[in-house]
Structure formats: C-alpha cells, structure tokens
Length: 456
Image (cartoon, rainbow, N blue to C red; front, side, top):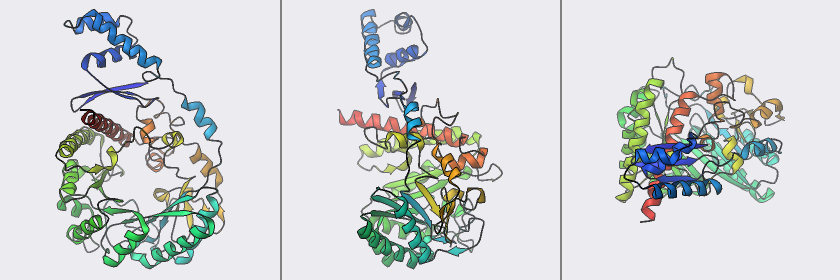
C-alpha cells in the first residue's frame, strides 16, 4: 500500500508497510501513481504527459521504481497481520496508571469530559492510603518491567497536593525495594501553581502538562473559573514561569480547540510567541448536540489550518525560532515498537485509571461508565473479559483501519472515542480519523523538509 499526496510544495510518497517516505519530482510522482493503478503502458503515458522527457530518461525512472519495489521500499508486503495474531497471545503487564487524585476542580471548563472534574459522580479526593495501594498494585502487576509511569490527574490534582507528595515519597521507597523506576507526571490547569509546588515538580516530575487553550478570548470562553470569570490572566504568568524553570523541556502546554476557534493555528502561534516551545493544541471531542462540537463541515477549514501551521513552523525553524507541536512529532527512524504501532496506548491492559476510592477503569475517559469498571486496587481486576477485548483492539481488528495509510502512526485511534460515538472499541471516530490523517501528512512533510535542509 502506498499513499501519495502533495503538501506545501512537496510531492510525498509513503510506502505504508515499510514506513519508507520518498520525496519525488512530478514525473516520478505520476509514475508511482500509474504503478499503483496497474497501468500497463507506463512509459507511453508518461511520454504523452511529459513530451520534453526522453524515452531513455523515463525508462531509467521506471527502472529505479522497480529497484525500490524489489528492495521492499515501495509497494512492500504487509507482514504485520500475522505478527499481531501472535502478539495478542502474549502475557501483558501493567506499566502505567492514571491516578485520579482529585474528582474536583477549581475551573468550570465547558467542554470537560469529566463533568467539571467530578466524572458525573461524587466529588472526592484520593487518600494517601489509596494512592499507596495503587502503587503496590502497579508494582505487583508489572512483572519484570522496571520502568513504570504514573500520571497525577483530575479534576485538578493540585487541590490534593499533599497526597501527591506522599504518593511520590512512597514510590521512591518502592523503587529501592523492588528495583523499579517511577516516571511521575502531573497534569494541571495551573491555578494553584506556586514556587514550592514548582520546586517539587522540577525535582520529582518527569513531565508536566499545563492546560491553556491559546488566545485570551479563546481560553476564557471555554475555561472560566467557578465564578464565571476568565482564568487566562491568572494562569499565564505561572505557566510561563513553569516552562522556563524546566528550561523549556519536559513539559508541554496542552490546549483544546472547538467549533468556535477552527482558526486554531492562531492559538498555537500565540503560545509560541509567548515563549512556549512544547505545544499541543487538540480538537475537542464532544457529542454533536454541543454547540462547541467540531462538525464534518469544520474539517476542511481545520485541515487547512494544519497545513498553514506546518508551513509557519518551517519558516520559524529557518529563522531560529522553532517550536515543537505534539501532533507533528513523528520519529521515522525509531519511535514505538511494532506492536505499539499496531495496538496503541495499551488502555485496558498496560495502562489503567484509578479513581479516588480505588476503582479501576481501562483509562481516564472510561471512568464513571460502570460497564467498564474492571475491579479495584484491593481485589485486583475482576472483569478480565473486558481486558481481553482491549487486548484484541488493534488496527487489524478495526475495519476502518485496515486499509488506512495512517494506521501505523495513530495505532487505531482512541478506544474511548470509538465507543462513545459508535458503541464499540473496534470502531473509529470518523472526524478524529480525518484530522489524524492530515496531521500525519503534515508531520511527514516537515520531516522531509528538514531532511532536505540537512542535506544541503
């Protein structure tokens, strides 16, 4: 399978199964397309389209395409479906937990999937005892895996900061006792950030996720305080200070764009102009009944914004003012292992969420849906059949993914979004798919452009 497209002046051909990316001229672009269409007289068609090209040059081009094909760099075979069947039978271990430290929040974000931090249930703060037991559960279920991940999540976790500190302290004890290494992360809206918290976070947190949507008017429209006032002016100086205190690494500012700001490129650039170098601004996922929900009619505008953002990023990089955009970050030489490329985040198997009272769900987005309540940290996983379903969730078990060029980059997308829109984790959220494909195209274009710059 190949995918051909044009972006920002580049002709790009992706060989899906090998992962090879080719940047080609117009005639090679057309020639590869004719191969894909099984055209029998490629040379004749090209001579008609490009009368200034000699037969000898066209025949040489066709020979080069044949060589790439024979070397497995074009039209390569899919060798992974058989692999995933074997991988599904492997024993999995738990390697990451999302700890819901607080089912409460000091903001009232209009698009919050957690119902203003309460997950449509009761307000609660996790106790240190539950947190310690959650880490014990993680260690016990991690097998021989040494590196483990724990994200402090909410609501707003800084509303329960003393417990965060106690859980980290306990985790450091477990590291010595069990030869494990915890990578702690913290997701916060920034309202409660202060110097003491940042000193602790810079010492103990491998990563910080700092929530801000972009321009003041955009942010304040969707992320007001409980009293209805905007939160932009409250959090901005704190987030800037946090990013600088971490030397612009090991964090990212994370925003959400909606139907109200489909010109979100402006929000990304606003954040970059403020000095943030690690940026993620993502599309809201919401029922169509919500006025802020992204619709299919919004998709062309949003895709154009991704193209515009990619072009602007190239321009700024050449001026020495580059920044990272989370959804354009693709590692063509390394990146996730083959299994992760096919099966995604590991929700329901390797990655689990724990509520303040110790209930276990496949991930934070399933919390509150009793159908997906897997068990609790006292008794462990009880609904192993649900975990088995998640284990089988991969790009070959999803009909919409099998023939998609982006499948090894999105790994099948979000199981929660698929379930919420279609009632099955083996489905795919259609608007999300359309936007993901465009992000992959932009990301590959950026890599191609950077490689070209490096080779000059």
